[in-house]
Image (cartoon, rainbow, N blue to C red; front, side, top):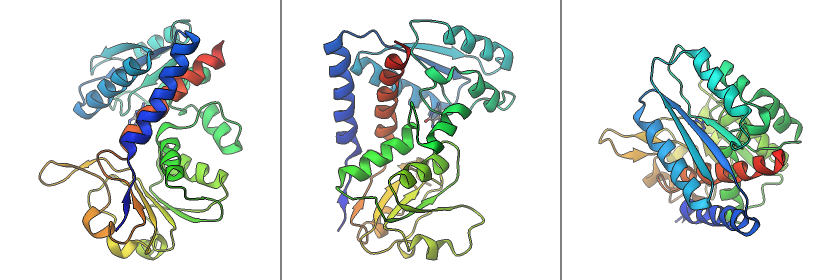
Amino acid sequence: MAKLIDGKAVSQKIKEEVRDEIESKGLDVGLAVVIVGNDPASRVYVNNKKKACEFCGIKSYEYALPEETKEKELRDLIRTLNNDPNINGILVQLPLPKHIREYKIIKTISPKKDVDAFHAENVGRIVIGNYAFLPCTPAGVMELIHSTGTDVDGKECVVIGRSNIVGKPMAMLLLHENATVTICHSHTKDLAEVCRRADILVSAVGKADFVTADMVKEGAVVIDVGMNRNAENKLCGDVKFDEVEPKASYITPVPGGVGPMTIAMLMKNTLSAKYLQS
Ligand code: GUN
């Protein structure tokens, strides 16, 4: 029987720390939240981010733009926000509509206000280990691993998925703590065998029921970053929870695992951005 990792509780504590610091120091902190188009999942994420801002005492400024917004219009808005002293952090919710090049948009965000840590300058700083911001989801996963008391040093860690948002930076953060890290992806040969080596297995694939019991070592820590809908339209992760849970020592549920951590780390980054700009 695995112990459940309670992402709600861990994230709540982090948000309370951010709130208490903002309150005790009387800081004025602002986050611009930009959403383009009508993606329903993005709308839910943005609403949750705004709610967390309210809890922490961060002013959120929403910019909801229509689907047909031109790339130049969005870049012009970002340039305005870059120069606005009331705005400490800029978050552009991804994915963007197809006609807008994400890399152009990310490049336009001032690295000092890039609270997602997506800008190439911040990605480079993460690789070097001299960072201003940690990428929210991987940083949240590290917090969850730490909450179990697991020492990452020297552990075999396997990350499934190589996205810029999760897989690649996740591997870097594990490496910074002296893990031996393997990144798996769609071309990996004998995925199950590689995954079975993992003391810590992180799945960021985006497919329901992708991680099955035969891919998990007895006693592994299993972190599920997936956020999917199953055949019954129920929210679920990448991990086939019922069969993996008995083998794991610790496991994150979906929902209530990694999801709330991403938002808590965003709050933390927004506070860091405030300090960076003062
Ligand atoms: N879309 C999915 N995850 C994220 C995230 O962490 N940040 C932003 N901006 N968009 C996302």
